[in-house]
Image (tube, rainbow, N blue to C red):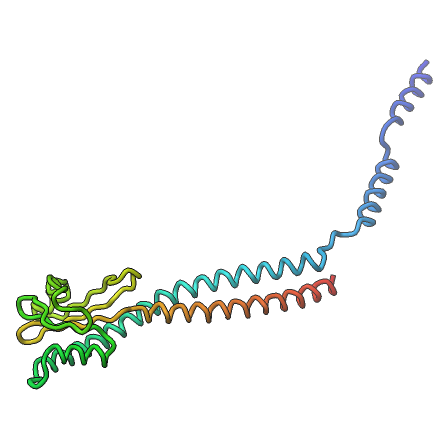
Length: 228
C-alpha cells in the first residue's frame, strides 16, 4: 500500500515543468532573439532626419537674424537721418537769418530742391511765411505742430508722422531762428527700401543654407548607412 502511494507521489512530482524543460525554453528564446535582426533605419529616413534637423536650425537662426536686423537697422538709420536733417535745418536757419539778398520763399525753395526735403518757415506767431512744396494759404495752423512749438521755445523739435495717403512716415526737424523757426521734412521711405534689400539678401542666404543642408544630409546619410 505504501509502495503504491509512493509511486503515485513520484508520478505527481514528475508532472509539470522540469529543469530540462526550462533549459529548452531558455535556449529557444535565445535562438529566437539571435535570429531576429535589429531594425535598421533606411537611408531615406536618415536623410530626412538630418535635413529636417538642419532646416529647423536654419529657420530659427534666420528668424532671429531678421528680427534683430530689422530693429537695429531701422533705429540706426533713423538716428543717422535725424542727425543729418538736424544739421541741414541749422544751416537752413543760418541762411534765413543772414541772407539779406534773396526772399525767404526763394531760400526755402532752394533748400528744398538742393537737400531733397520739404522746407518751411514760420514767424514768431506760428504763421507760415514760406514752404517749398505746399502753398502757404493752405497751411493755416501748421505753426502749431509739436516740432514748431518746441522750436519757438528755443529748442530743437523732432517729430515723425504720416503725411500722405500711402502712410509713408515723414521725419520733421525744426530749429529756432530770430523772429520765428524753420523746419525740414524728410520721408522715411529710404529706411523701408534698405530693409527690403536686407530681407532679400537674407532670403538668398537662407536659400544657400538650405542647399548646403541638402548636400550635407545626403552625404551624411550615405556615411551612416555604410557604417551600419
